[in-house]
Image (spheres, rainbow, N blue to C red):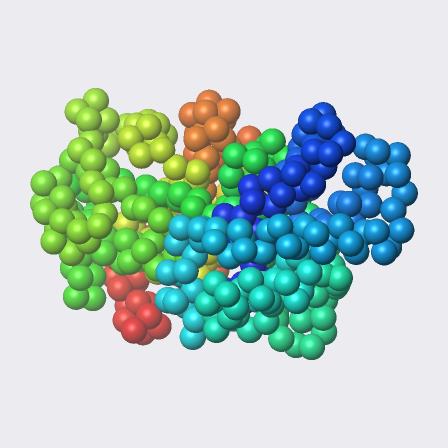
Length: 424
């Protein structure tokens, strides 16, 4: 659960990146259009860097002038006079003010910026935002120094904190301090972050829940009463509770299921299963192929109504692990660790030596795909020849009770009993 958010300011709270870029360009026009354009381009590529460092760099690299500290301070003061009123007048990023108001009593927020601290505090004050933040922190201290101070003073916990930024400097600060980074992706940073595969603001994650009206082994399984509600309600509620799932799509051939969804989950979309995809022997990957075209998303999580014990916390943990890996894995799927003695169909030992009789807990574990969830992107699905498990998947281990999948009538009885004992 997120308890603390560290916010960059320009481009994350206020739409002020262009304001500052224009001011920097204006200051360097006296050296010619070419120099002014170089300054602007460098500024856009190096967001989150102190203006003091930028003036020093630009004069040395573009003008071959080494500035004294006094000259740097004078330039910074001139810049401040140019931009403060314009930054205050900048529009806020859509949704930020509403979020701050909604979560002011449940999430601690801090601003951490490369803007001089006194100037930043004045801007925040004039924008009537001071009451939403525990503190407003700027230069001369770096973002890394500020984050380390907050951790050292036990004001934030890294495990429950995120850093929202729009620049490579923000990303590096989060990485250096072991914080989860959340990118606000906009046109000016797309090239810099073209290989980024981590968290994004406004990331669309769709849960795909396929449900047939007919069920061979457990009759009317999806609508069957499970401790007072239709079975499928539980997985839908789990998806809706997730911090990462933004949409749910139910693919079904049943008018009864569609009517129940419309009554109890009006915000959820349903899609009619095409005739060619109806039947007990249709591959789930074919249904997924249809659904990801119907509702494009950044990520998909495919799950089943037959997993009523799956917890939203487990789903969130899976997304956090996958996204934190930043592209090392292209997908994720849930597994259950198994440490027992297996034999093949001919009675030959598979994973052990009967003459040794190692304790089962000392055997090399195997991992069972338990079908609770599969997380993937459209690209990973296509690259894996239309398969929900990609070419480089991450396994997310679950305990075997939570992972229980209803496949037979006896599974239904067991799951319902466990749910009644431990989930109410």
